[in-house]
Length: 261
Ligand code: HPA
Image (cartoon, rainbow, N blue to C red; front, side, top):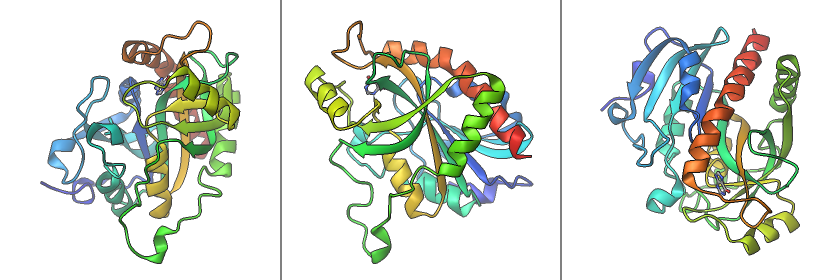
């Protein structure tokens, strides 16, 4: 077992990316990618569900050094909302300052169709868990007021414009899963101000904010949420639509990094 920091070699990434369901193909765009399997990194969770690989890829995206985590573990896999803590701590230790989280999500708006990309402006924790529960010390009273960095969001909007990709912005509701939501739960999320719903990202945002990283998060909308006319959420649909949306996600990320240079 080893640590990401000790495996960096000549790489010095400041940007980390976590790829969500069916977005694994984004790693094809990493220039001169070096793979480190999660199984070699202490504390990294080995994803147990299809649609998620389990490796860190070090290389360049759009000419900028990145550490890409292909695959994440979810709280619903073992009941631990802090399942990504060791991986995020290792990213921090390896020098990552900005974390870009991606995920697959269901749309709470009939007008935001599958295939859309959505930048998270904020989240609502509908899961009833928090990855910092059980941690001690005043530092755990983390402010979540600017958790999704406005500057990064602006850069992504500009990058999307350059690539002529339509990106929406909205509030992500974190639902524990792994069952999909009931139509009544979706109506509740619509009423309380949600725009999309998914089973990841929010706990990682909380952990990364606690660690002092800046966070941006982007959802690929893979389906309309339960109960919306025409909706039929399923993991197969998530994987299928997620893979299609990965094309635009890849272009958006590459453009974001090109513009950073
Ligand atoms: N609900 C929760 N998570 C999801 C969905 C959904 O409809 N689609 C993709 N991930």
